[in-house]
Image 1 (tube, one colour):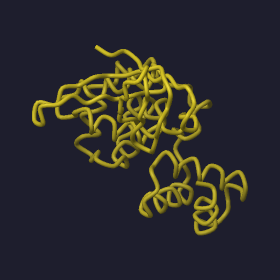
Image 2 (cartoon, one colour; image 1 turned 60 degrees about the horizontal axis):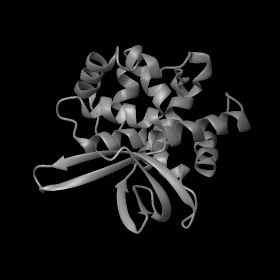
Image 3 (spheres, helix red, strand yellow; image 1 turned 90 degrees about the vertical axis):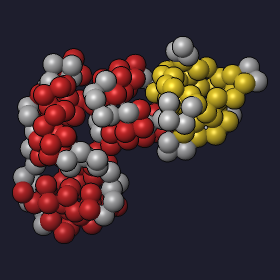
Image 4 (cartoon, helix red, strand yellow; image 1 turned 30 degrees about the vertical axis):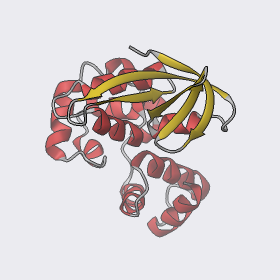
Length: 199
């Protein structure tokens, strides 16, 4: 089992990192949150890992994470029947862990079903299977603004960005910034415009 990699980052993108460890080059698939933490190529980096055998392709897949919490949540997601490592990584790339945990605990099917690849039935199953497991990763509502219910026009602005291809957690942050800039009573269209600038 490879627990972690510590070496020189040779290349990194939104979904992978190549790390040289004493002359051996490892390629790890990573979530978007880890990609944002990578230093420029040429710098020393440490990532936590999970090694998985893909029985269909007959090869090993290496997954990397910036924090223990990311890796823990990857393990939790992939422990659900029907969610393999790649789907688990896709889900992890779209969420912020504390708001996601809060949504699970509060039975927020609407929030969960907006995640790409998660419909209403899957959202309901996630709630049933993950409610107790996600408690340690939740945050008080006042400390997790993106998990709080949004007013109608703010929610509409977030939905509009998602329709335009912006990932959910990025859309929520962008509209939160827009609300701080324009005020909570700003028209939906103005929030969308500001959100696109702030994403």
